[in-house]
Image: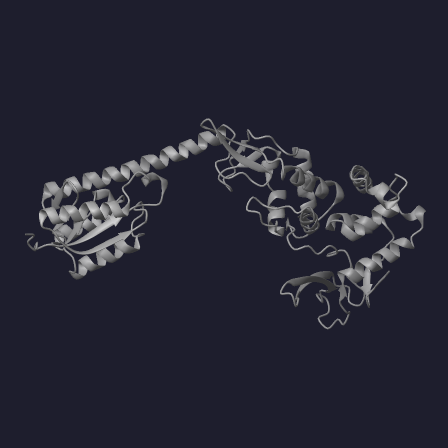
Length: 422
């Protein structure tokens, strides 16, 4: 018959979800084995506690912290556990346990094969075993970092492949290959931004029209568009860790070249704000207020629809930086585009002069729409006119392209009562 033991034990079981402890026994197995030990040796198990948490850092395990608090209160004076490394893999938690033994608050730690009591030899052995577990952790951390560094030097980024690529594993070899379904669309998105001056929002709309889906079969978001447009992985390089300024040449096949990537970055970057463009205000910093001379800024308004969605509206108005009482009214982006189209249609052909950069972009645009058979479908004669390209930039061009265009053409730049005047 099992006799009550003077020591009141708490059975503590732990298993980390991290990769370094995948080989450790499951929590259920630890509890089962230690209950059998308790029954065999007449140990009184007052309570069973368990958790799935790493023991690398001191004071990070909630259940273990409760156990320490209860030992201080005298609720338990013994711990039953599978192995010392279940209790501690760091110097901080180990120090608390040994200190409790010195104070007499913890009379024994019983593992599957050993009993540790408040004797110099037992405490020394306990510290050796827990320190060995810490050493293993530290060495594994060094080995993992070395393995990651080696992988980077071989050209393989140690993380999931971005959109347009897929991770592949065969014959024990892991690599990254081009996603035949998504890569062509990603590549064309870069070309559209670089050559057609399309904004991120226009790219998102275009990708939605292509029914583009992520790897989890979700529609792409605007933030995802800007994320891949800024990612150097697509021209063959990657930084790891991000922000470390350590760059590696990838072994994966690039989708674009460095020249195209740099061209996209110039389109995305707004020098006036010294930041990448996220929320698009196509005509910001182009016009000034007629009444007070302040700049004209953009503002976004989201209106709820009966269906539950939201509709985005953009308005332009005086910043009132020079006169807070300025009464110039707002004008919507839709109204402003109609106004600009009407003005440019009144400009004589001989005055429709664009700079060399826009001419180069116009040639790229003409090439793309020819390949897509847009010209024949719309009844064009196979040659794009400057006037048609000007109207395209006003309707869909990027902020930089619109600014360049308005600087080239004799377009009034002062906004007065929803009209443009000189």
